[in-house]
Length: 358
Image 1 (cartoon, helix red, strand yellow):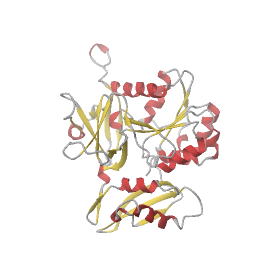
Image 2: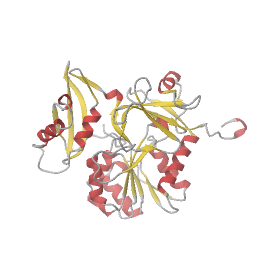
Image 3: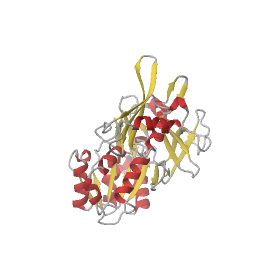
Image 4: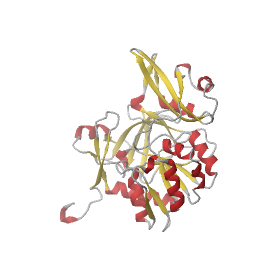
């Protein structure tokens, strides 16, 4: 509360804690202005009508819950609240969507893939749109979505760090795309793909993604040094404008949309070559027999670092053939040093409590 009891748009609306890559929790201070901008943009993009039903199933420690709670309440919609832990049960989620006439639901891509395997998913007749964020959305999961729902339900891929009011980019998915972009900026937001000197990189070249605009958080609670490190002065905006260093690697495509490549801190060096595991993962996820993929660097023997791919098949009965197929598939699209040393086929990928890849 500011002087005189009035609220300031720049004042703190809430604090969300995120572990990031270090594992040490960081309290992100989010302003009223950032949250309001994100909610107003969402309404302008999707046009929720009075009485329309939105499912709230995201734990409130995850920032997606912010729009699930407030968007329908601001627009005269109906908030349908899932039971605690229900977001991890695809059968339950499908039954709630069907019985309550839910039109809008959010999924982390890992959970969307599990939901699409649920036979009752295709019976969610009132569903109008599915919003995805929290992880990279693979082309395989996108194609499965359109196989289940056809063109009658929209699929939207959003991206955003906790430090920037939930989401800063959006893309409406299209059947047949080999790569799923994260799209372009939401309202009052600017995006930059920059090199180590904060210079813009060419189209098609990966660089670190920076965000500017009204949705940037105020910083980290009690962490002035970290705030200064991550929220830097912008060489492209007005005096005093900040850029947030996301730590994510992205590139602009020829259509002016952003494609997510992975985390900058996940870049690894194998046999002298620098590799983005996210780029290899993106290629593997494009194989028609792959529903989900994860690529990591393992060092089971000290000094012997290898790239390993973990995949969930899209079909049945070809598990034994898939590793060789995928090696050939990757070898035809990437340099030899980026071909995984091993491909491990799994029934499911392990998930965290929020439904993200563990």
